[in-house]
Length: 163
Image 1: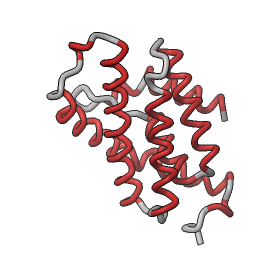
Image 2: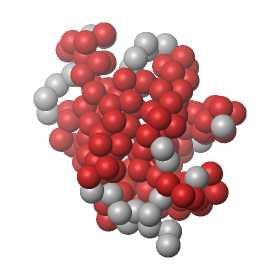
Image 3: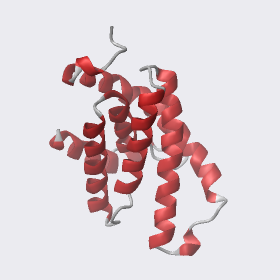
Image 4: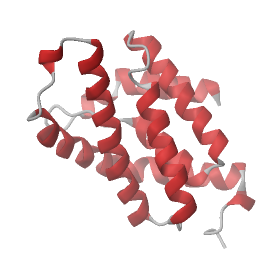
């Protein structure tokens, strides 16, 4: 799995910028983290989030800039999964909206904390946030369907929606 997650980070950094919509790049690590938190066992999803975040932090040089937001999103999805998730696309989309906003907000907050404080403005979040949510929602089915298959293959007894 570690090799697959490493390949995912490479794909995110090399190929995903070509799929940008109005300058906003979809986040495969975010979508994989959300799907893992919704479909796999919580400890596995948290380890995936942490590992993906560490790889992205290592590649970007920003300690915690990706790992902290990804773990926060995984925790949100794990808690939400226990209360609401039934395996459907609509709830996956709702978690994608919430997770995307949380991920982007934490990244901007950490970037403002560790870099130039003038680089972050309050007017930046709404426009960027809407575009970020839209591109992640567009890519959700591309990630969710293979993740569902993989989750059924890895651990079919933990899911209640496959009956």
